[in-house]
Image (cartoon, rainbow, N blue to C red; front, side, top):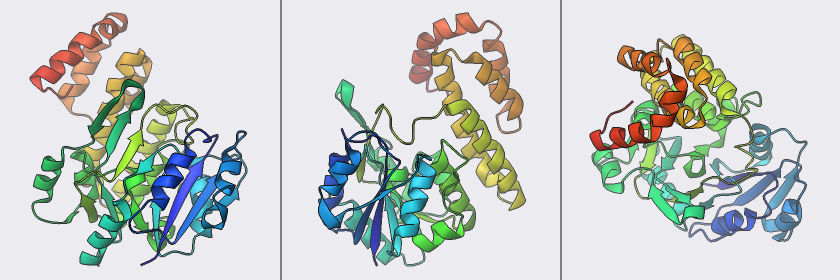
Length: 317
C-alpha cells in the first residue's frame, strides 16, 4: 500500500513548513510528497525546495486548487492519495490509523476521519464531531455505508482527512477546474455516487486552521460557487438514481450557508437560494425565511439574539 501526499499551495510561506513538517512527522511515513504551487509570489517555492528531493515541487500557471490537486495526482505514482492544504496540519498518527483501517476493510476505496477546528487567533479549539458521538454512529464498525448519511451527521471529515485510491479519483474525473470553490465537496460527492461506503475514524487525526488569509481554497466568493455546486449535483444525483440520498446533504449545506449570510447581511442571496432550491428545503423552513426577509435590516440586527435562542432551544433554523 503506497501513499502519496498532495499539497496545493498559493502564497503559503507563513504556514507551509507546518504542513510539510506534520507529514514528515507521520508514524507511517508516506511514499511521496508533492507540493503543487499555484505560482505563488512569496517564498513558498523556496521553502519547499529547502526540504530537498524528499518533497517534490511542481509549479503551475495560476489556476486554483482544483488544477493544483489534479497536477499533483497525475504526477503521483502511489496507489493511494492523501490530501492536505498548505495552511493545515496532520496529527502524527493520521496515516498509520487510516492505513490499518483500510487493511482491516479491504473492500473500501477511501477513508476519512474526525478533525479539530483551530480558531487560533482566538486560542480556541473544537472537534468537528464529539468523539463519543462518532463511535456511537459507527456502532462498532470502521465505516459508514453511505457517505451522504455520514455528511448529514457531521461525520464525513474534510479534505485534510481524506485518503483515496488514486484510480478512484481518476475514475470520478478528478477535481473540476470550473468549480472554483467547494471543489473538494464536489469531488467527494462524485465518488460517493460510485462508492458510498467510507471508512471513518472518530478520533481527530488532523487540524483545520480557520480564517487563514490567501488560502488557495478560500479565494473565491461563496454564493455563485455554492449555487453551481448544488444545481450540478441535484442533476447528477437524479441521473444516477441517488437524489433521495443526496437531498439531505444538499439541505444541510444550504442551511449552513443561509445561516452565515444573515450575519453578513447578504439577504438577497438567501432569497435567491430559497427560490432556486425550494425543492430541497422543508416547507416550514422556506416559510420562516420568507417571513424573516420581509424586513431584512431588522432581522440582521436581531440575528445574534435569534442565534442564541436557537442554541438554547436546539432549533435548526
